[in-house]
Image 1 (cartoon, rainbow, N blue to C red):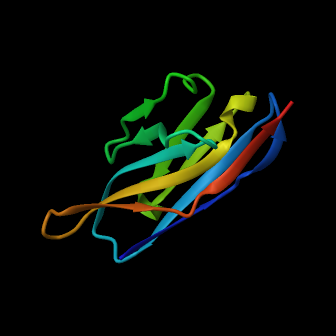
Image 2 (image 1 turned 45 degrees about the vertical axis):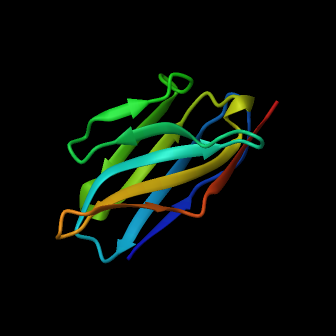
Length: 120
């Protein structure tokens, strides 16, 4: 089993910054993709950004240029630097870890979520 824990959420004003962290632990063989998702009230969960084991990144159009995803493979951690935050960034942010075991079977693991609230 893999445990995933996020941290770093909070309440900020529009235009300010926050940094989210995600740490994976447990029986880890290989972590392939890691990503941040968010879910606002009444909306579906959406991909914010992702990073592959090779370091390739992908961003939602709404955050491109404002958010930066980074990964420390040696520590199985991932970060999301969020700058120029907007009210519409308010959501619960979830860390997703895709793990591949020694039988090449992949599974997704999710953190419990961390609340990000941006006020005017």
